[in-house]
Length: 72
Image (cartoon, rainbow, N blue to C red; front, side, top):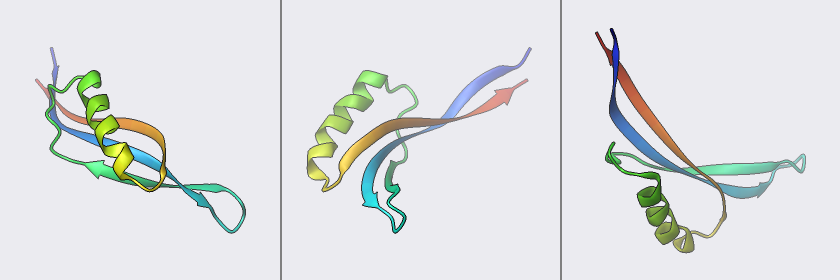
C-alpha cells in the first residue's frame, strides 16, 4: 500500500495588479517557500494578516501549495 508523505509547502499570496491593455484584471504572486509542512491553515492566515498591510496591492487570494511523494 502506498503512503503519501508531504515534503514541501509554499504559501502564495495573489494580489490584484490592475487592468491590462484589454481591461482584464491581472494578478501578481508573492511566494514564500520553506513553510513548515505541519503549519495549520490558521497559522498561515495569521502570517498572511501580518504581511498584507505591508503590501501596496489588494489581496485577491491566499493559496497553499504542497508537494508530496508516494512511498511504497
